[in-house]
Structures are given as C-alpha cells and as structure tokens.
Amino acid sequence: MVACSAPGKVILFGEHAVVFGEPALAIAINLRTTVRAEPATDWAVNGRPIDSERHRYVRAAMDAVGLPSPFHLTVESEIPEGSGMGSSAAISVSTLAALHSARGDVRPESIALEAFGVEHAVQGRASPIDTSTSTHGEAVLVLRERGTGFLWRVDKDDVSWFLHHRDMPAIDLVVGYTGLDAPTGPLVDKVRAFAERSEAAREAIKEIGRITLSGVDAIKGEDWEAVGKLMNRNHELLNALGVGHHLIDRLIEAVRPLSLGAKITGAGGGGSVIALTEDPASAARAIERAGGKPYKIKSGGPGLEVSKP
Ligand code: PMV
View (cartoon, protein in one colour):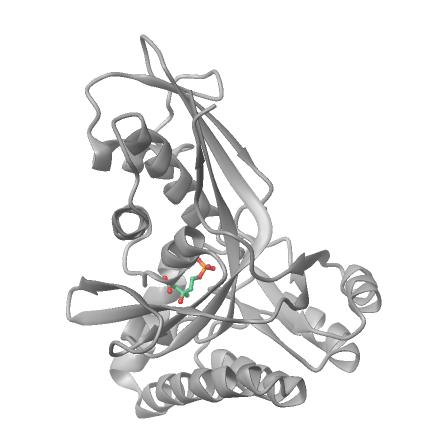
C-alpha cells in the first residue's frame, strides 16, 4: 500500500495572465488530498468501478502512467471542488505519485510535468502553476526565464514557463467560495478570445504580470499594505478581462473593508475570492453574511508527500 498526499493552492497574483506566460505567484495551503493505492485484481476508485466522467483526473492519470496491473484507489480530499483552491491539481499529483510509487521512486519534477499534462488533457489550455505548486508546496513563482530558486521548466505550444521556489512567511488568508463551480477551461478560452481581438485585454494581461513582480517585492519587504493594494488592482484587471461575476462582487464588497486587499483567486466566473486580512475571523463572518462559504487558511506547508507504511 502507498499513500500520497498533495496540497491545494491559492493564486496570490497572476491567474489567467500566466496562461500567456506572464509571471504569477501561488502558495500551497493547509488543505490536502490523499490518494491510497493498493494492488488489486480490478481497478476501483473509492470502492466503485472507475467512471471516466466522475473520475476524469484519476482516469487521465492512469492513462498517463499506463500501468499493466490494477489498483484499488482511495481518494480523500479536504479541498472543495470547483473552489479555485486547486482540487484537480492535488488529485492529479497525488494519483500520479501513488501509481508511480507502486513501480519505484517518485521524482517531484516528473510528477509536476506529468500532472500538468493530465490537467491539460482534461481541461484544455492551462498553465502549470497549480500542478507545480501542489507538487512543490510552499510558494511557487512562475517567470519567463530561469532565476534564483529554479525548480523546473515546462513547455507547451508556444509558451515556456520557468517554475521557482519562493521563500515566504506564513500568512493567514481567508478564502470566500461563491458556491458556484465555474470550470476553468471555458474561462481560459474566453480570455484568450478577448486577448486576440483587444489591445486593452493584452495590456491588462501584461499589467497583471508586472503586478506579480511588484507583489513579490512587496512580500519580500513584508509591506502587506502594498501587497493588499496590488491584489486590489489585480482584481480590477481580472474583472476587465471578463472573469468577474456578481457573486464575486458581493463577496469582495463584504470583505474589502476588513482587508488589506481582496481579489478573485483562480479562474473566476464564480469560484472563490481571497482576502489578505489582519482579522480573519471578522472577514470570514462577513463572507458568510454575504452568502459565501469562508475558509480560514494558512499559506505554505509541504508539497507532495509519499508514504509506504
Ligand atoms: O483552476 P483554477 O481556478 O485554479 O485556475 C487556474 C488559473 C488559471 O490561470 C485561470 C488557469 C491556469 O491553468 O493557469
């Protein structure tokens, strides 16, 4: 038996822009997915035959690994699905690791690359930020070229992403889930179509990239007010790219007065917002009053963990 667990993530800066190769910063969170794999005579997930629709990520991970002999997989996740907290990345990473470790050792870099392939196969165009953050943990910065803390490089179509480890102090964040699960693929396509026809959209994408880099500096200097302002501006730009939603507006309005900054995290169109706040308890209550589901999370923590009891 092998048990592999991987964390969810939140994107602090740069979602959507990262698909175009712009910088982005994501952090692992203290909610995790665990996959256990036991050799068996047939394939099963949580005691049932594999359903290619319901278990899309597990299925794509199995196809990627191409194992000759079957396993019974048990999947347990603390990460709410569709919430922008990286549940699909965590499931891809932990499933791949569980299947590979049945055969031998698991290398984080190969898992991160393969998990990106799984996400790409299931949801279409995507960036490797979620899967790399779930694999590496802590904080992951995506850049256009190789820099300090380099982890690995991912190439797809005409884009190259250089993934880096970032040191980051643990911070308290409040995520507000709208309750509306908006699939990432169509939102990514929508932004791409907009960017193809609009100079303003292309400018917004570039500005988001610059915001990420300013955000990284502000975090390094522990200037949390500046970090908050940059989050607010990042949010405006995501709205300008058309990934806002009235349920998101409601949560942002409720939480802003109690926060240094607040923004969409992940694909938008529903999903979740994230608030940087000195008063997580009040921010969580405000989200609840505005109809959202709050999660008080801690940033950082380990990436993929493999145990063979
Ligand atoms: O799937 P989500 O909600 O975590 O969004 C991922 C972030 C995007 O930039 C919108 C897509 C991507 O693959 O980078």
